[in-house]
Image (cartoon, rainbow, N blue to C red; front, side):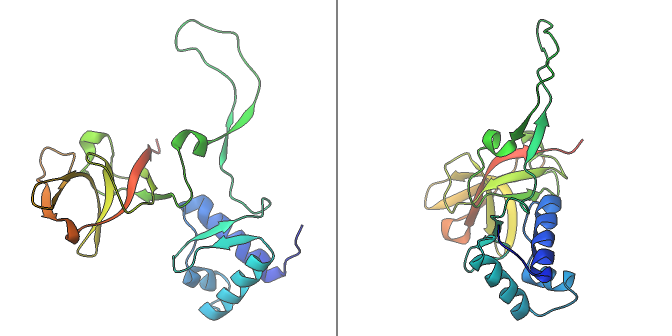
Length: 200
């Protein structure tokens, strides 16, 4: 097991907490602020040291792309499965317990991320304001898929349809809203919807 300095412990713990609470890794600025306002250069030095020790893995040129490899610091991903319940005929109570990794059910791939929904443009697809959407990072999508699209530096969640003459239709799932039809080159695809998580 690697040994870490006190500062490296702080960095790992802050990354873990941020990923646990927000679903994403912190930025260099956020890490620096947590450590008392240290510079980006100092934060990078700590991250490089942690990489050399095999504690984390970073993707070059991607903000927030930090993966914790040390299991002692990795955010908890499992939810306890307490047993089985009948939705038909009653069954005997089952007391066996195991931890279920949501990734196994949601089809999470490396590079997947969560976004919090604001607004009701996808309400007819049962995607509500405040929901978390699981996004698979990709630059391509099939017709009818719900995508994260970038238009004029704004990001939106819409269904994508290819029209004639190289146009793309970004279709809201809300009968009160109109679709946007734009040239394909005016739209950047940043991901495809893979799941919706609702806090009750």
